[in-house]
Amino acid sequence: MEVLVVGAGIAGPTLAYWLLRAGHTPILVEHAQELRRGGHLVDFWGAGFDVAERMGIVPELTGRGHHLAEARAVGSSGRRIASFELSTFVGPDDRYVSIARSDLASVVYAALEGRVETVFGDSVRALDDDGDAVHVTFESGTARTIDLVIGADGLHSRVRRLAFGPQERFERNLGLVAAAFDVVGYRPRDDLVTMLYAEVGFQLVRLSLPDDVSMFLITARHGGEAPENRADQQNLLRERLGRGGWETSAVLEAMPSARTFYFDRVSQVRMPAWNRGRVGLVGDAAACPSLLAGQGSALAMVEAYVLAAELSRSDGDHVGAFARQHARLAPLLRSKQDAARGLGLAFAPATSLHLMTRNATVRLMGLPFVARRVMGRSLRDAVELPAETTFHRFP
Image (cartoon, rainbow, N blue to C red; front, side):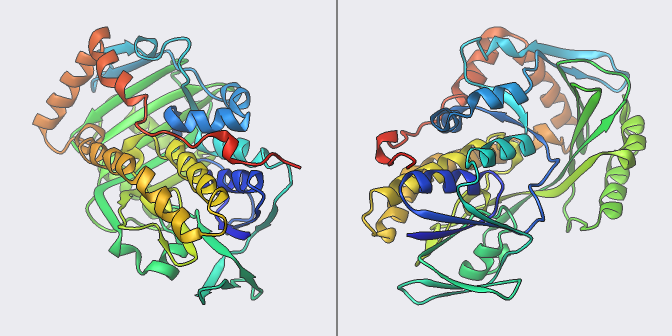
């Protein structure tokens, strides 16, 4: 089958890789002119790590990733509230790495080795599923007839809007916005340490990375529409964080000089099904758990792998393949989404009581047996991946 995969982030190239392994002909189309840069640091583990291992890309991921040694929470004066070593729950043999989302995406894309037709700077404008094929019209004006169309185009998926309806039918706004940006030459630095600072209404995280780069991650409470242009986004962050202590003023002052800048509302996507006819969804387009879950990229790779496996053994029955993918993964993804909804108060405390509770929880994480009990369980995903023998080998 010819399968149009819309989106060259993480889910899309992963799906293309395994579709190719299954003997199908994937075609990638990406709205951006090139692979996207920037974004936040993701903690990569669980079943997604298993998929990466089967793709042979783990050495590259660990080479590009960051093995952070400590998480340290501080108060407004910079005084340490609590800290814990990440090795407490991530042993030397555990499959876990922190990596920039853009680096993860580029490694996955490189695994295709130029074997997949890829179109940058274009996207779908219209979809007409006649039951036997999907007639696709692109923004560029070109048209193609495709066996299947898979939207891997993220939280604001155009494929989902065209095939399923407006975004507001499926998006659940969690009442926060998130920003990520990196700056060269920021001081002070705490190498291999995750610095955490929270006040009522926001959390600010600083990571000191190689090459004199510091990355900042901000989550802040915001109930309205998220601004769309960068100037308004940065003004919103100044408004929310303006009275914060610790290094807040210095971070806001450095923000305009950031090399990359990511900003979006924190949302989930919840859908009763991930396909309609010959059009399907994977990754954040289908079941975004929000960055509060800390596992969206890994889960996207799992979704892509399972869908490709089910299509591989479907003998042309795409309806059955979509149904089996949903049955296998929906319970896992719902559990991740439910867990993430309860973490908003940790990422941006709403009241002084919530801030006190958050700080007390961080202190408890400094106790090894608590950290292992809380985090160790989350490093394992309750899903069985289809066997790799489901797929054919590259020719």
